[in-house]
Picture (cartoon, each protein chain N blue to C red):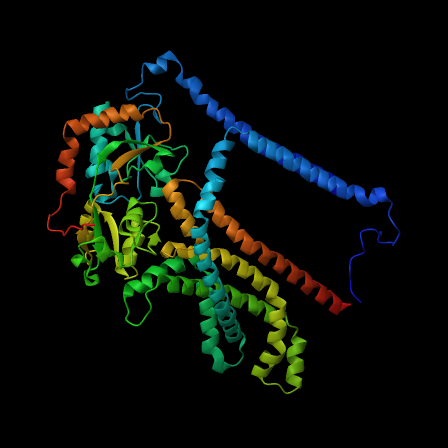
Length: 283
Length: 292
């Protein structure tokens, strides 16, 4: 018994629509969108500044020239992003579990999680990247890696795991108390309750929010450029700084969009499915 | 209901967009009418020149912060230093009093970015290059520095004598500088780390993330003496044909360039810049030189 919306040809009452009522709204939508688009285009292109804007932002030759480098930098973005995602996914869950533990024995873990989350959520990611990327290597502690890529990525993981831990926690809080009581009634221990009853539901609850964070992280990896990592944004900036042509930034922007828009659609889709699942459950 | 909303949105969008472009056009038209009166033309080439950003004042931009020996104590108005020394000499040559020089602080990128600039010119060790000329105007060159390699002593770069010796090191430089171009195109190093500003480059050097960087010799002399005393000037590099030397940067098409150039030529001819070079920019000669 699905809750699908009624098809476009039927009114809620189930009566067939006349063709006029059926197609006219679509036609008007298409017409107005086209009209607005054409007017805007006309206004933009006829503007006195347009040739300059075009040369500085949409210079195809510059975009083609800089594209291989920006793409190579974007590879670094994706590489850091994927590794960070995996680490954040696990580390944030650990933090959320720490924070949700009951009992006096676990107080140190709980306090650690609370302090960690408060501290790292309260600091700008950029500050953390600078602190880790420049600060820690400057100590020159033997045995620690000196790579700014490593430390920059660590900073991003630290920062984002604080957010993700809170997302997980909200998911755990959203699991009905009855579930906990039921697990206890079945004789499950605290850990077993967490592992078999709470976490599977909690994670499912928060997947849309986590995906949202993942999209944000995908873009924020560009912050690593300040510690010398040549990511897509930095490669584009280098070209811009050399030629004052901003088309390279547009090239980087396009790459980010190609990566983030499908992610955003996926998030929408997962959210939608999740909503349908819940509605189904309540009916 | 939905259609009406759409139409309303469309109308709103048009209302919002049209004035932006129309407004832009009006603004551009104004200065022409102001500059064409006879009264204004007679003032050209004087401190009250209407073509100045603020007639009666010489509005000069520089970096934030500025470093010795180019300007001392991060205080352009103090007049101590090579570049602000030039500006005050130039202002005097053009007929401005000392108090008429107004300082504006902007970062390096802003200085060489195209677009309207809230000052007459920018002085911040900008190298004159052909590529940059497309977007900004330069004055004549007032100083041609040598480039130097700055590295930590344990990297062994002080023993380098050729580009091949240097190529293997890990390099870093500041974005938008000719130093970065030099490392990539002349030395031929790969995977050069690129930092936002000189401070970032020096921090990376001190943290051991990079072995070496290239900067102009006067900056290197000050940096190794004060900012990063652990580092040394490992070598002086052969000249860079792409870097024509330091010039003042103007907004593209700024009509005061010829007038400022006359002033610069006059103070160069008077030996003012040579004196300032002797006073601020000269170091020891005991640095090894690199050959190609």
